Image 1: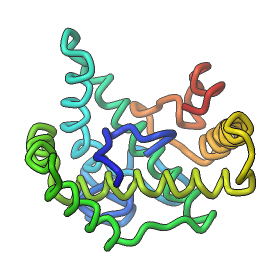
Image 2: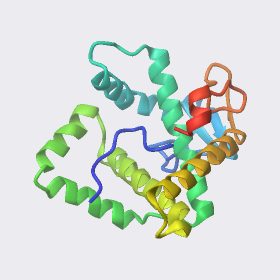
Image 3: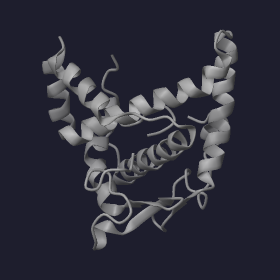
Length: 206
């Protein structure tokens, strides 16, 4: 069974649930104003603020000696939301899906398993609601299924060949979706076509 994941998932990370990740058309007012768009899907300011809290906790846990600045937290959170939307749209195009019932079953398994109390404590520590964690689990499963589809034509090939195919896909995938992503002034990061691409990310697709 898949374990709970941090907010940064593989090449990504979903902007699909109104009130959870905040898609276009969910609500009105300043909080609903988009800070970025991936094709026609908008990422709202309220979604960004919602996910900044757990992202801050994650970053602080990763580097206890360094307190992340507000700018770092905001940019890393927006990166999570944008790359999640990339994953959502690429998976839809490739026919990769994860049913809500599958995510619910995984969540229940994690809570009832030997490390259930630790899992529950982790949710509280990160400030994640049940809906948040279900979404993170779903995104992780979606990423795994997309990866499986990409490597399927090489079934039986060497691990090196599979890694090379996945790596080539990631580089092209990242460049393709970056061109479909725009960010509002004040929210521009490397993942936006109107931003400056990161050399490391452009090379690795990470």
